Amino acid sequence: MGGAGWSAPQRLTWAAEPCTDPTVAIDSCNNIYTVFTKSAPAEELYLKTSTDDGTSWGSLTRLTWNPGRSVRQHLNINQNDVLQVVWDDNSPGNCEIFYKWSTDSGFNWSVPSRLSWNSGNSIASNIVTDKNSNLHLVWSDDTPGNFEIFYKSDIGTYPLKK
Image (tube, rainbow, N blue to C red; front, side, top):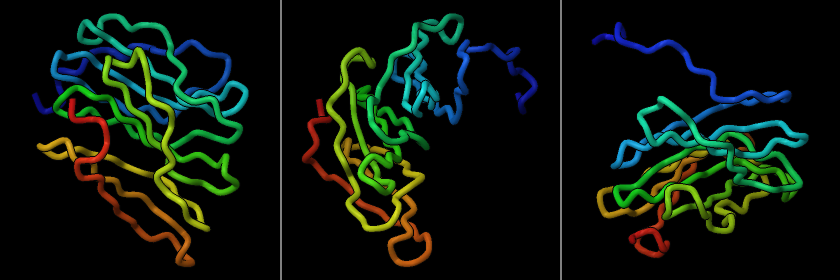
């Protein structure tokens, strides 16, 4: 171990435009999911999935269709295999945090929910779920005059406890 057993790199995208900022998570069936930003022509989020331990990967699934930039995403999978994505989006005029989820391995997704409503920029979010599937979110926000860390939780109200 100790990093000596890594496989050779495998290219996952073949796009004319940049694909950046990947995040990765694995569900209880060892399906691997990656969400990343693709600039085509605006920056949007895409999902790619492997159901065979990374040997092969499915086609791209577009996750966002926004007039602004969807960037700095983070992917989380809770213990019920619900996929959850948070990201920054500047469609409201400043960067805010948005969220969507899927209960069927990424085939269908909820409509986006806006999680921050600040006068400044809310960026670089990260989401986790605890053992009871409660959501915990952190992000950076410059509303106070400089970037500070903010936190909020959702205890028992999101439809993610399936």
